[in-house]
Image 1: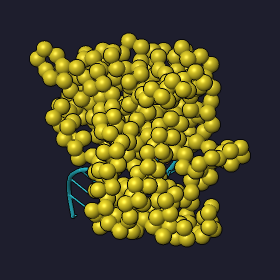
Image 2: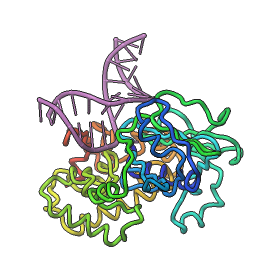
Image 3: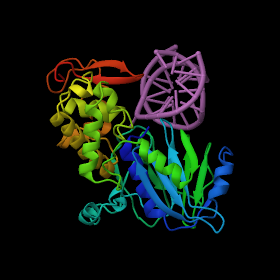
Image 4: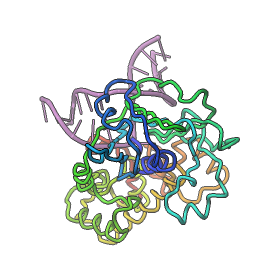
Length: 338
DNA sequence: ATTCCATGAGAAT
DNA sequence: TTCTCCTGGAATC
């Protein structure tokens, strides 16, 4: 699935182009007709991501309470946006400092290219023109000219959210459901801290992560993937964070020092911010020139260990190891990570 | 043309 | 642990 950064970008997309508008909600595919009918005609009032969960608020009516559309993309899920859509990540930035500093610079750029991940960025001629933007599990985003508005649904569209000027189509989600406020609170309570979620102070979030991880005898490689320990990390960030910290994924959380756990959290804060701003999981700092181009073109050139099994470690030359941990592929360097 | 595999995660066994 | 949900680009034949 998209790791947390993708979902935050999607939440910002909805914030920028849908919140405040009344929406026609439908299920072209037919598998979400009841839920769509509950939301149809309401005004979208909020858009938030917690970890990998997207929460879209819809206002109440005279007879009915506020409702929230809860979506989790799983591995395959994708949102396709069309119509009057702003696709520049810096336009979508919700934190004032980021937006103010960079808005003018890159105001009309999209992350381009269908197909393989890591396509180069691509300029967009005019921000006012109809366009398509795709935010999907793999984080590819495409931009291009759209035809008529709204476009016909393509494939199996579970939910279509249509305003006067913009449309969002959801396909292939793991979770798509309507929640009442109490259920949303329950969901939030079972999730670990997310540095980009606005509901908790950074300091408190860090402490919550350190406390929880240090009390567990499970390997840190599993704890980072446990959404109740920290929300938003997936298989790529898990492997890369542990390599960057030079920590053996098999060490129990209880065996890590507080400094090591704080370091992991702070590096996650940093990588997540970069991911939200760039739309890519850039886990090697400071790439320039040809190396940066290679990293954008090939996954194996973009990370320290992820999908690099059998290749020499960039740092020590040891062959990168691959094993299964809890049913997921774990990549790590036995030479560096102790 | 067909099969494989994935940046998840809950249920079933 | 294995199955299942369900999509699509990559790898393979």
